[in-house]
Image: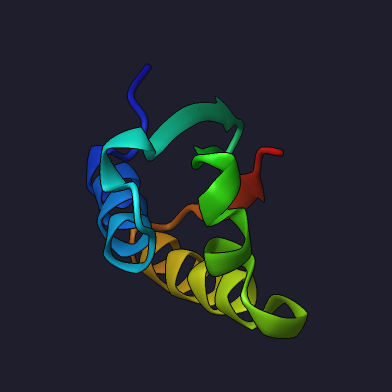
Length: 82
């Protein structure tokens, strides 16, 4: 998969910075045309930190990923796995 390794690393770095168990952060990546879909996995105890109050952290993460992907001519979608 050609993918976007720098985008995947960016998502991992952002997520690890806000959770209590950074070693349990993993990101799966798949491409669907010009869209790169990232699935973020964190420990159950860190789910609230990644989502944030009223989803603010999740929205912010998605906005950063969308902007970063746009510079590469791609679209990024971030799914947070439960």
